[in-house]
Length: 315
Image (cartoon, rainbow, N blue to C red; front, side, top):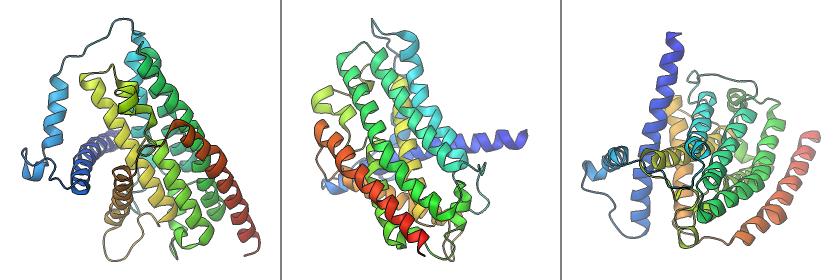
């Protein structure tokens, strides 16, 4: 019992530390790309800026707008935060650094991250605000559309290894990362594109397009509930990058350094690439995004799945 409590506290601690670190790091990356310096005042090079912002949000008044569906509006932030936190327990940070190695780990993580769309849609529906509702509906359509190519890319890895266990997938890459195989390299690119849309990152940040919807689905949220959406977003961001590391980049495998160090280096490397994309590319239109998912990415994913099956049969 004590072990479970300690593991739970360790997961929660890492989730909140990771979310705050990623917010600070993204502000620094965006500043670098835009030829600025970013936060520099609070702490060394602004390292405590996110802590200060968190305290500020905690102290802000929790305003409940008139006309909202209070139960749905109140529950929505928890549906955005809790599933990604639950997905953390299956991530293999190292050879023995995993809370639970589930034999359906890939499906478990995919289902937990997909549940977040329910919280986003609830936030839009319960806010009694047309901009929030449009943002929630856009998010639901986007995540459902891009979940298909993301899962098809993951299925290819499962076919290659014959297991849904994340630890088993990492161990299967002991003699070579899957990204070095042509059909799995294509699957990796598809996964990254779909994962970018899955966590509502630019150029697929349609649900919270500031120029069209204000703040999107969390327009009516303030204080701690507003902060919970950010924690959920950056936790999901870390999870999709960690899954890419696990499925295609050998997970914690690597020479000389401790296994968890390799895992974090690879994961934060992918996160940096996705941040770079966000602050480089313009936002696409809603019709372009949906067409790309159904007319381009999903057919390519299906074709790549068939090619991968052919490779395995004729290997």
